[in-house]
Every structure is written in structure tokens, then in C-alpha cells.
Image (cartoon, rainbow, N blue to C red; front, side, top):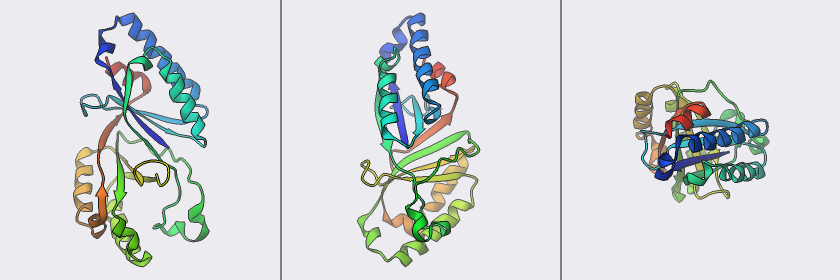
Length: 221
């Protein structure tokens, strides 16, 4: 999986309307072309963060598809005015701490579950302290049971993808739901769990508003 955050250069909004329209159409056409081979969702961050304007979440079986997609987006009229201040890469696999992950199944590849498609996606990279891995499996399991129980109290779909060996962080964590206030409540309660003492880094945090691609590009100006 890949989460790519884009920032539009100010010069883009100074272009004439026709040039911007053509650049957006080219960008949308590339996204449509790749939908047959890549799982894609688009999110707006306009008015939410100052360092990025939109995000494209992608999933595929081959990294080469991400490579080709970004290369073709670069060649569009809009792509010439885009920066990528943040991008994260991770792989899906079964969690070590969930009951269904027992035995050899935990080494199997994950699958993409589109879910219900909540209004918001909350995304952040995550790194555990090294001391966490010195604990026994039983100790970690106990703390994660508490962590999972807290998460289950709230109406969010939670997905954790693994970045070990692929990117700088250890995990990319996503919460999908409809109420930012409830997400704040969830994070506040998770901070009181024992496992949170072993968190080294869980920033930057992105609040992403799900929008169709055309609307995402409309909002950039």
C-alpha cells in the first residue's frame, strides 16, 4: 500500500482556466486508466493541513504499478506543479496479536477490504520503542488485548500496514469513520493504555476527507 500526499505549487492557481482544466483532465484520465490494476481512493486536505492539499491511497500486488502511475502523473499538466511532501509505503499482513493470526497464517499476504468507505480517514506513521520487542510475547499480547478492546468500543475501521524493511516507519495506521470528535475520544483513551508507553513516534497525523477525484481537483483551485 502507498499513501501519497500532494502539495500544489502556488503558480498553479495563476495559470489560465483552460490550462488548469486540461491539466486536471489529464490527471483524472491517468487515475481512471490505472483503476483496473490498482485500488485507489482520493482524499482532500484543503483547509485541513497547510503542507498538503490532497492524498491518493493506493494498493496493488506489485510496486512497479506505483512507479508507473506516479511517472505518468508527473507527465500531466497538473503533475508539473505538484510536490509530494509525504509518502508512505507498507505491506499488508495478518496481525500477530489477533486470534485469527495464529499459526502459520500470520505469514500470509493481506487482502484489500474496501470497507464501508467512511467520510474521514485518519492516517499516521507509527514507530514502537525498541524496548517493546524485548518484552515477552505474552506481555505484548496482554497489552495489545487492552489496546484492541479500546479500539473496538468506537465506530471506526482500523487498519495497520507493515513498513518493516520498506520505509522509515514500522507501521502505517489508518482509522476510517465519520466523526472526528469520536476519533479524538478514541486517541485520548488509547493514550491511557499500557501499550502507549512504548510509542516512540506517531506523527505526522493526517485528517483526510474522502472525496471523488474530480472534487479533489476542483478544491485545489
